Structure formats: structure tokens, C-alpha cells
Amino acid sequence: MRYSPEVLDYEGVSRSKRSRSGDTELVQNSGAAKENETDQFVNPPADTDRPVDASEKESPSFLELEAGFWQAKKGHTITFACLFVFSIVLYLRPYELIPALSGFKTMAFYVGIVTIAVYVVTQFALEGNLTTRPREVNMVLLFGLAGLLSIPFAINPSEAWATFTDFLIKTILIFVVLVNVVRTELRIKMLFWLALGVSIYLSVSVIHDYQAGVFKIGLAETNTQRVAGAIKGLFDNSNDLALHLVTMIPIALVLGFENKNPIRRVVFWGITLLMIAAVIITFSRGGFLGLIFMSLVLVRKLGRRSKSTAIAALVLGVVFFLAVAPGTYSGRLASIFNSASDLTGSSSQRTEVLKRSIWVSLRYPLFGVGLGNFHHKSEQELGTHNAYTQMSSEMGIAALVAYIIFLVHPLRKLRMIERELFERNENSRLYYLSIGLQGSLVAYMVASFFAAVAYQWYIYYLVAYAIAVRRIYYLQETKKAEIPG
Image 1 (tube, rainbow, N blue to C red):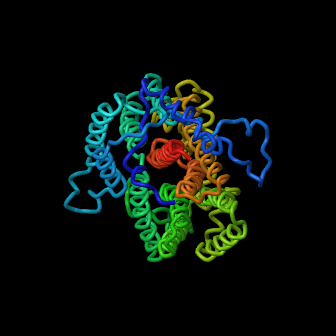
Image 2 (image 1 turned 180 degrees about the horizontal axis):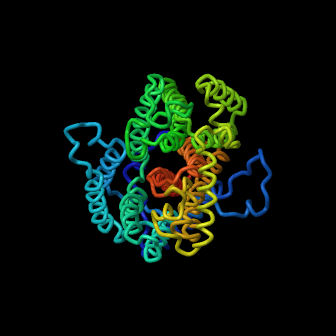
Image 3 (image 1 turned 90 degrees about the horizontal axis):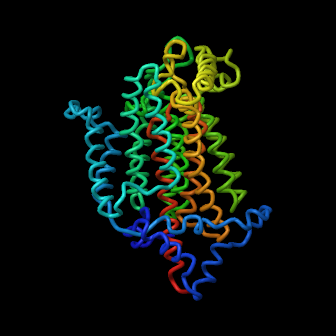
């Protein structure tokens, strides 16, 4: 489905108090001439492939749930330009790739400060507030507050404060900017292209290093030799690299599905296979499990229209996996269930750390032991290696609950978009993006169980993408409701 210039130019932001009732009337009182069209959307025909219970039939549609929440307004062009530059610096770390920029290691910090400053001025001028307030933003603010409250009770308050300030600038503030600024299809696709471009570079580099025998992680005398990412920061650790790639794979796949150009389809699907190969080469067990669960989600959802195509794609994926996987890969995967097969002992070590982090969470349920302080309670100064217990052990159980809602809520909203478009038999760009981002979120939720990445960028960009899809979908549907049938 081609998107109109109006969708790109008019962008949803949070409504002001003065406009809330008017926005609701836009949907509910659009006139007798438009009621039939709106009713068809609000009460679509039931999915014939599955039974629909009474509670689901009576549940409000996505449009009703989002009614009056987003407005159509221009703005934030300069803010997005700053945000895009910030994302380039964050992903590529040009001061490491370009020797002439080696002295600008704080580049991301200053670009982030400029981005936030431009955003605040523009947002107040447009809306008179700091941010729109979807549930995801509320949850981020809640576990940000939990982190702040944990500082006085931390084992090392100065260390907790340092982690909090870094976390606040790197995630919460920029996440708020993402939510309010990434509001058009063009903007979300530009960030997709940037992330996929970085992923291609990382994938090619890691495969080349593996073939050349350039191992930077593990012991040379064992079969645990592992490659590292070509870019430091978010990607130098092989597990973190696999987590990033496994969340990008669904996006590349659905961009191929929604594209009508056969050449572009082949390109996107080739990128998908390249990233799958790179995930395998990392020997990341969390990445492998994320890949499996993500694949099941995509096969099930994309296969609703053509089961034979989905089965064929699954078989092709299995054949590709067997062809690419190194001979020692099966031993690495066996250590997931049998720690005795892990020659380095990392599996049993992480199991003990997980148990320890659960114990610390239960011992300090209110405020945890402080941001970045779990290692004081761990054996051998190890981190949690788990995003969920990282939250609960360092900020308390309430922070964990907010974090889980932060992950699950966009997943539910994307599923509603997917279902409504499926019931209308509409193969639009947003239909495929809603499915792809569901796969990305599931991949993160699984892979992050094996990595302490709750404070890192991966999930915050994904959730912001999900909110952007939700906003664009709502604006398109309300625009249709305004047009007399």
C-alpha cells in the first residue's frame, strides 16, 4: 500500500487537554454518512480461522482504544535530523572507524544533548508539553523513578548515581524523543535502513573474521573460540551482537514481503539470510533461542494467508541453518540443557549467577541493591547476565513489573493492528511491519534472558518503532473515517 504525502507531513503527537473531547467526537460523531464505513472497521467480520468468544466480540476496536490520543500536526523536522545523526554516532562510533575523529569519544553525548535541547524547545512550541504519554512512556518513567529511589539504598550510592545518570541520558530521554519524533513512515524507514546498513556491515565482518580465524573471544585451545563485532560498544560482545541481529532479521524479512519490486525483495531476503548466518557464527545460545522463537512467530503469522508458503520457508530456513552451522555448533547448543557439555563452564556459571540474582531480588524487593550494584552481591564480581533479574535485583520488583509491561504492551497493540488488517484482507505496509516488529520484540524478550541489556539501546528503539506504527495506523484510519463514503 502506497502511503500518501499527507501521512508523511502530518504527524501524530499527544493531544492537549483542550482537544481531547474534540478528538473523541472525530471518531464517534463523524456523521451519518460515515457511520457504515466506521462501523465496518469497529466491528469487522470475525476471523473464520478461529473461534471468537463473546468477550472478544464485545471488546472495543483499536480505533476506539486510541481515539483522541494522537493528533495530526507538522513539526520536529530539525529534531529528527539531530536524532538521526545521534543514531549514526551511536551505531557506528565514527571516532573509532575514522582516525581523524579519535579525539571525539564524547561525540554521542554532545549530539544527544543538542537533540534533547532542540526537542524540548520544539515540543513546547507545538504541544505545550514535554511528551505524549502512551503506556510505554509511563512505564519507562516508572522504572526510571525506581532507579532514582534505589540510589540512597544502594551498596555503593556513587556507583548507582553514575549508572543512573548514564541510563537517564542514554535511554529514557532519547526514548521520549523517539516516541514523539518518529511519527511518519519515511522517518521510521530511514532508521530501519540505518540499522540494517550497520547490521550488514557487522554480519559481513563477523563472517569474514570467522573464515579467517580471527577470534577475539574465548580460548584458542578449546572449541569455544568466538568472533567479536567489528564495532565496539553495543556490538563488540558476541552475545550482544547476536541479540541485535536477531531483532533486525524480522524487519528485513517483512520489508521484503511488503515490497512489490522483485529485485528489492531478493535484496531484503538476502540480507535476512546474511544476518541469520552471522547469528549462527557468533555461537550465542541466547541468540539461537531468540532466532527459534522469532521464527515460530513469523511462520505462524505470515502463514495465515498461505500455509504452504510458510511451511516451505520454514523448511528452507532449516536447510540453510544446517548448511551454515559449524560442526561444533551442536555442542555449543547442547550446553543450554547440559552444562557438562560446556567446556568453559560458562553455562553452569551463569546458572549460579541467575540463582543468585533471584535470591538478591527476593532479599531486596523494594529498591534492590542499587543501579549497577549487583556485582557486589555476586560471586567473582559477575553481572546478572539476565535483563529481567538485572531490573529486579538492582531496582526492585516494582521496576521489573514496569519493565515487563513495557515489553508486553506494544506487542499487544501490534497484534491488534495485525488482526484488524488481516480481517479486512489488507496486505498493507503496516500489516507487515506490525508482524515484523512482533517478531523483533519476541526475539529480544527471549535473547535478553541471557544478557544484562535492560539499560542498553536495543529494546528502546524497537518499542519506539512499535509506537510509531501505532500512531501512523491510527492517523490513517481516522483520515479514512473523515472521508464521506
